Length: 365
Ligand code: N2P
Image 1 (tube, rainbow, N blue to C red):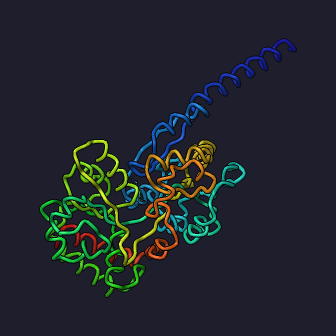
Image 2: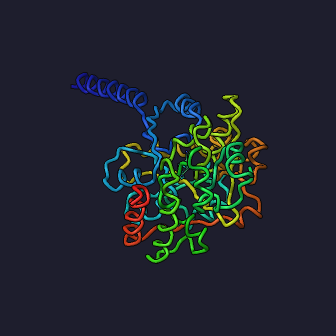
Image 3: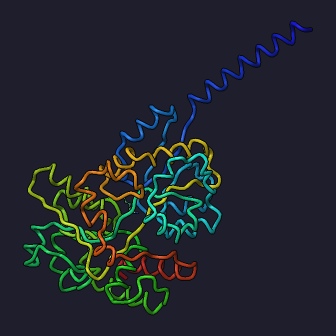
């Protein structure tokens, strides 16, 4: 009897060990992040350090991410919505609160950013910042000079004024396929509230966009990086860091393409992309380890140095390339900050108007 009990417990100890060993090997985290948004060596380093395998998928639209999250069972453990989308997803019960005791690196975060992200996630209970940036104008300096007689773009007028955009039609114009980025910009250009939910105001934005629609070659939210870098297009309404990536790719390609980025004087949107854990995430412990790792100052600085966006981590700034840190289009100075606005989530009724409007703009009808 004693012997039998010994064998039983020895067997279960062996089984337990085996299971723990197997489990360690199987540890995995499923991450869904924006495209062109990480130095892949960071993912490899995380796996080397923790033994956790990263399955990394990408998207280029908040709408795509939201559809998956609202359907449930996405299988993702870490996702990165922008603040305005995060806010309504929190309301919809899509996320779980973060166990801050598992996130010691949160002490590195920057109050200038957390104060702003609290607008979307009060007390920052559900999310931490990954990167933040602006919506502006990326352009081919020489081609714009040839078409418009100036290589300095400082106003949305170059895009929203049909006479101006017509001159850029042949060299090519791309626009983000993202109503929550473009419609507020149109409202701002019209001197209206970029957060307006008035159907009249949205109709004015639609009218303005339909007038320039004939001169837009494509609505797409990631292809403009290479299109700008290769000289295939001369203007893109896009996200700051992506335009800077285009600029660097152009420099590396040595074909004489020079790319500029403008934060238009009328005002530009400042957005925040937040790491969060879905309520039904299958690997919560691993998700927390991943998020904590991404808040390591050296790690997130490496990411910023690669993707050319500012991050929300104060301690990381000593590791961020000086050129990036000193660039007011990346880490805005007081004068640039004055020009930046944030957007609120659309309520369901306004969202329906925005979606209908956007379909008309993209299809041009
Ligand atoms: C990364 C673009 C992320 C900015 N390529 C939009 N939130």
